[in-house]
Image 1 (cartoon, rainbow, N blue to C red):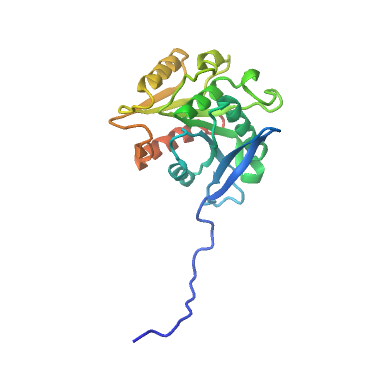
Image 2: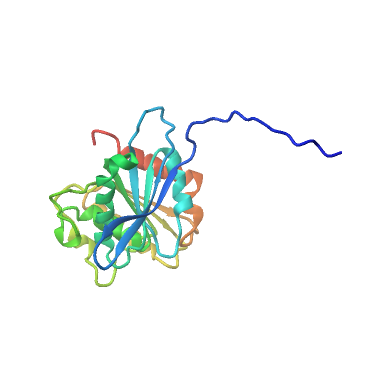
Length: 247
């Protein structure tokens, strides 16, 4: 026997539960073209009236889509900004995106003083170079003195750190202190040689920078192993340490 049609009333929680996502935000424009990013801001689960979140600026590997994986970090209280395509001008693009986030911090509830540089593959070159060369005008499209950029830490995944026709990262190193670094690389990566991360680790040690290097056993390029719950906890703990107020 068919049930009669019914009207049901539910009392579900009205508080925000899911991150807010803005797509296709133009962070740099000129007469030739525009560059865009996707911004994900955590749900407000803090009880604060208007919290401002540390933001992870992520330069992706051109062959890997990490948005769903990175969204796990919004549950840890971090905003995520993913740049579209940094291959042509990786360093300039990264700095322009960082300044966009700083200038629009109030609108999107971001903390402009707590930005983390992060990149994968070719994107790791952009993130690392930006952390190295914060005072280098030649690799920035905006005046470095008008709105200085400082990254609180840098995270690389399966990084490529030498690009044809691009500056050597070691040549960008300024006089200021380097932020803490976290390097991740799979031992079975056949796209980006793990020796590149090993060499960066050795260089950072020579500079007496704070650096940790995690080698993921049997992990190939682009693997989800970089974003298992355990690895997300490692990422979140590293970021939390680097963005402590007063540092």
